[in-house]
Image (tube, rainbow, N blue to C red; front, top):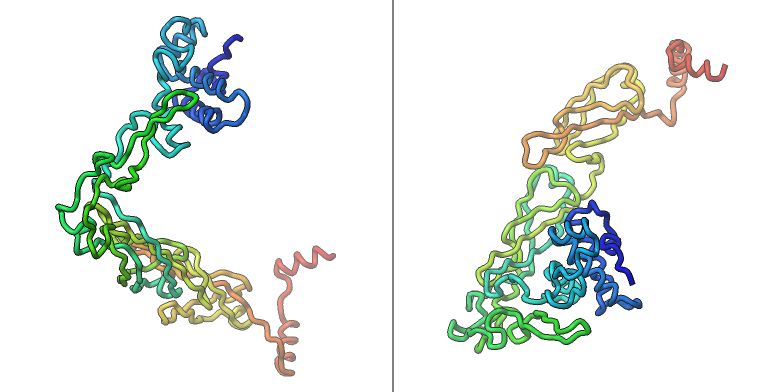
Length: 376
């Protein structure tokens, strides 16, 4: 059977770059790998994909293939059966990565791995804190109680009674990993797994610390003070460095992430650093204009001039009276929406005056003209 075009096999265009070809190969190799695929002919498709990638991932091979097609691979020392002679070719490292993602272990030699006896950073912690509207606006301090792993003071985090009680793991020789050989339909495969004897630490402890029982850390409950800056908002997080779980082998501690839940306010609504509110005024205040007082979050009041003829729904602005921007010296604004309150009940005298006012009111303004025109 004639071979399919290598670009067609990988489902890429001839103009595709190396990264596009690599992504296509990895996707298809996972799909057709015989150890995971269930569809008929998966093994043959897997070999076809590997062969195509072996050529197209190599600059010289690809150039020759683009010029001469499959004839360039006949007897040239590449292409053909990807499992014979030269081995996996250009796709070996990528195939190892794919097997690692499917089976959780490294394929082949394994490449570089973190030293199991080297410093390891501790885990991060998260804590939710509830703030009042004012506490979020002006900043505050909160006591936060944590339940976390801390370094054992008695053994200094080693997990052993003394230094003489620590020795190199005899099974993995201190690497923390063991190599296993498996026979598969593709041949002998080499994988690396975590050493079950030392749990990946590379060390064996003959006599464990009687305080932490070999863990190197102890669980403790601790209360710390967290300073919360002015201007935090609902849902935001604050990172407190070094207040997470203890590190291992001299590694740094993790961080604490404090997430805020800010309670609502009875008068103000927040939009970032800006505040919004609705202010009721009388008809007389709206018509004639007047200075009114707006209550601020700190308990003080500030004067706001309502211009004569202010219409219901008008929005007035107080600059720089909102909430402080985090880590900046600037503030947001306050936006006041005017609500003209209409009395539900009026006295006889008030009715008389209102009717007289209605007779005297000038209805020649544009708003009245538009209404008359619409229903003329």
